[in-house]
Image (cartoon, helix red, strand yellow):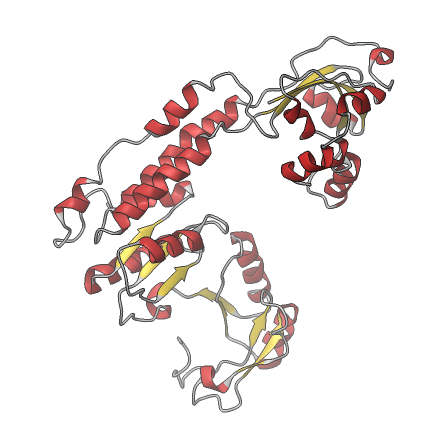
Length: 72
Length: 320
């Protein structure tokens, strides 16, 4: 999903509430930036990693889980 | 080309490995020449030893492209014990003589951008009526360049040097191509534009100054996380990763530096390409050097996990 598509999909949704339900607290100077980051904008990372691992491009070493993210 | 009209030699077969679906077909009469009215059979490469035995082959000739030194010598080590000599052909006997000016795009790596450079040259460069372009592939690029250089001095053609690989960069200097005009008909304009010690471009610097210490926009981010699961204990230990270790993950862009370097030097390149003769290799060598600071930027952006405070897994959002 492109950034543009993400923004369109996010229109009219209460992203702050959606994220809070997933135990994620969002702070943003501008809400337009948050719209980039809707869950649908991302592929399932586990699936991506499995493909990379399975294809022998990389090997699984450790899994990190996020505590806090600062977006550029 | 080498053996076609040589009646003293008989070519009994080709082997095919790289190009799909040509094994078990025949090398056509039109290419094989009058000595081979039935063409020449092409066999899969794994039959090499069998072919040598069946035909009593004296000599295996490797005509290769895009394979590694290892692959070449592996073939030699199959041909030799089977009884045959093994040889590689040089450029003098294998290159066709050009009747028109030749533009050569040389680079040693697949994906280095030969096609794009030559296309750009063709579209924007000095040659309006585009001459035939010979793309020279990565193997033995230095020999090919030497050959192309010779061709240029004899025929007034032009060379674009677009080199990415360090060896190729050194090669241009070794041969003095671009450093000093190598032909007497080089115009002063082209010659004077050849000498300047390049680093990151001026635009690259001014663009970067205000961004120093920032992570970048778009999809760049800093993530504080923790190690949730270990899959490969040995490697994880070498990385210094342990369960529940707090990590800082930084995805930083080049902050426009790479883009700027490319943009600046593509412009330079197109400019010098419109002037006849020898400044192109120098411009491309500058562009190549300008990527060094960019590479250093990449290295300095590589940091390992530096936060080493363990947190209880229970404090992590969603548990672990």
